[in-house]
Image 1: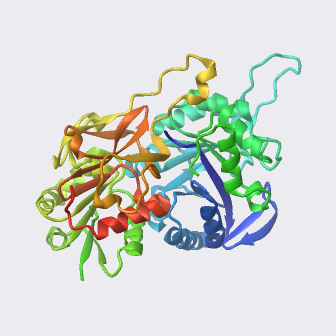
Image 2: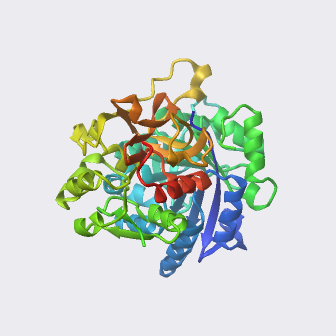
Image 3: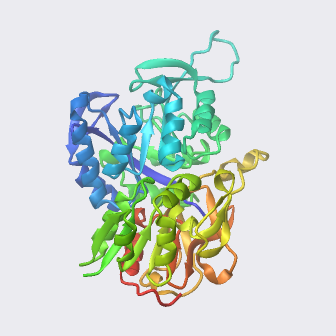
Length: 260
Length: 219
């Protein structure tokens, strides 16, 4: 049977791995090839690179990074950040990415997702959904939770319901959804499990949980309670708190099927 | 010097497959091309492929690569990967139904859609389509292509359709998802992998190395 995946996420800025909390206090965390190789050796099932380079002029740097990593690492690589056109998708796939992650551009033009999926196949189109809880209108009202989609690295609300958006994106051809809770991102208090469950129950494609992991228990919750097919984390791996191998061992002990 | 030809028909991502072959092919040359004459001179051929089957077959026909593959498959070792494996069969249900190369009897069918949620307790067991991620492959029989690859090794899959060879002898390996399906097929000098060996870590590279050294026997 299919295994649940554990995916370290690397933020890339101008060809270097960086780490920080919500884009603040970015610190250099090494060479992408070396970091990728370390995670690969620890048993990572995939890698996600998120390009946060501010300047568009630096784009060729990203392609070089992807090429260098793809030459060395023989596990799937997803690259996101600034993917706006089919030419961007093609360039990243040619550089060696296996999937591209689309966020802001999908909100600006949902048909871009169908165009890219048609041209390159649904298997390589990941739609990243950055979702933030909508505050209930009345404090005492028993409203079911709702989330809105955010773009531009979580800075702008698109005013779209996240669950509805997930459904639309799969109809347009997304082969996988990367769901990040903006409320939880960087907090280390665990995934937004209600958000994950709501999306996972709505769409037929795999869901990758993201945002908020501080412990290995959180990874288990994402799979068991959130219904995620894969769990993504950044800081617990980067800071050396846990290795990917420890995370997978832990999940296996809890009865989750993983590739060991 | 021997040459492994990688068939380039503009569908998706053959770069990682070519790079992996370069890594394991020793002193063989990796030749990426859509030139039918040049490809026919290669010692081994690899047919990659991702995306939809209709566009794939349209491109193969437009470039006259379909006949070239059929011709080459008479004697040379041929490897199909993912969609490149699926088109080795006779027909695919994808895109409303498309006739494919017909080198292996049988068809390509879709995984059933996930059933609606019924029992809350079983919710996390829900199966998604595409079948995406790492799954174990059980080797249906001994074959030179499996040399040094432990039975039930993990491989990386991404697909919504799967091959159903008519003749059980043509199934080289199986995996479990919703049901048992052919993860690897074989017929004489032709092999096909539904999974991506180029994304399957050391065991994947080992399979590619085995293909690079395969003379086409043992099927």
